[in-house]
Image (tube, rainbow, N blue to C red):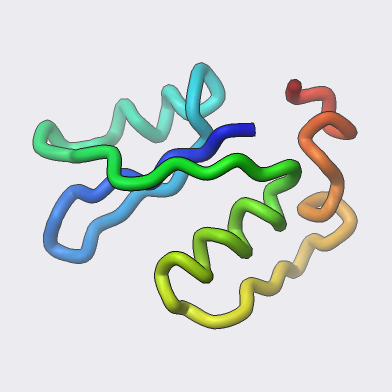
Length: 78
């Protein structure tokens, strides 16, 4: 699934799903927010791993691997 990274300035970023599943997050963006990056990922864990790499934050870990490592297709989201 496609994910988006939005920059609102002053170190404020929003990383969310593209399309209808990200509508709620995008509705909270400030007026000046700009889309700065998109990335495809098969699962939440994959998406967050790529996001952490992009931001230089080191290795992403999760407290919910049984959920986060399942693909979006396994969750019925595609």
